[in-house]
Image (cartoon, rainbow, N blue to C red; front, side):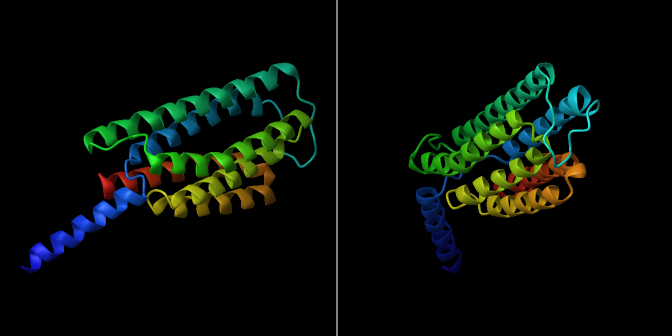
Length: 203
């Protein structure tokens, strides 16, 4: 009798979660985006930052070639990250017989997109003005804000990840010379760890 009661409670809880949260977000999305971010950063360092001392507080003069490479790496990294997140999330939704595009996923996307688009536009403006040194810190902070904003529509672990990203972003703003390393830690290492935790907990 007690076991049936506990099973009923668990079932009710799952139904409530499905109605208020997007539960098909895959941990493998976090792992894949983290690895892609590390690959993108490696490419940016080898092609651009290894030859230039641009991690400073002042504006620098960016030639057209390096600007092109930075934008290309950013677009490719972002595109692959979004693609992998959609792929793994879709696969999980199919396995769970859940809809990928429902009211909760729409809310998740909107709340994620607002801080990301705001931060992305600000970073583009700063890039064209030559303030490259601030970009790693600002991308971490706005990414963290986006995760916290979206966390109420999916797994609560997303909020903790967002807090870590914001803290790393603030540290990166203070220590600009080491901001690429902190960016790698936030977008790469911690993202992968988060993905593994979520994958193990909610698989």
